[in-house]
Image (cartoon, rainbow, N blue to C red):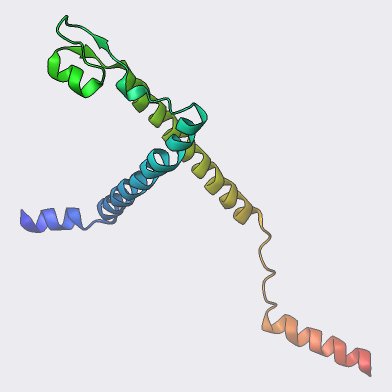
Length: 138
């Protein structure tokens, strides 16, 4: 059974999938950093520091806090601002991924459309070309 599992795990598709998942996770961290550390601060600066994460509706009479963290300690709250922030982050990540994949596809098409280098003539063709050139000189 161990031998059979090892054969399964070492098949090309399983290893390729594992590498893809690891690279995907690392790429996801890069895109999340791009969104959280570069794009969202720019959006915050443009909108005057607008931060949806502290928007909530109190579902209990006991809640009178001004920020979400304290309000959650006091009772039930509907944290719609967190949902808006996560939704906005998702849309930005999806757009960035779309642009990256679009660029990759464009580069791939350009590479495929580039004309291939002409094939090197065979030895027979080279010999015939040399004979022709010698006959022209004579």
